[in-house]
Amino acid sequence: MTDWDEMVQYISQAMGAVDEAHAASQTLRQSTNQAALLQFRSRMKALAEHLERLKVVLDNEEAFAMDELMDALSKVYSGHKADFRKTPRMNS
Image 1 (cartoon, rainbow, N blue to C red):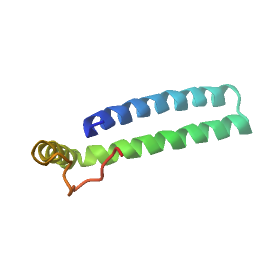
Image 2: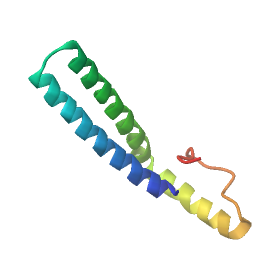
Image 3: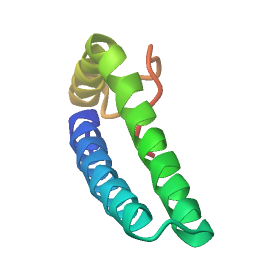
Image 4: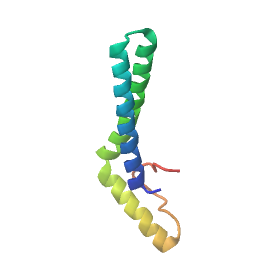
């Protein structure tokens, strides 16, 4: 999976987390209780984590793009990905 695919996946996961947080907020509005509040907080925490991952990529999109290009060129010429990157690999 390329960094681009990983970014698309992060966006998709963040959108899913938004939907889940919205559903939890609706439940909390209809039934304000401890369980609904805990569920809402859990969903909001998951959303924040997804958005933080996405923000790291978007804040450094040029560096990620250059590293992806260097990986591709290295793979063509040497048969393996580049040894040095400015950004962390998003996939294992």
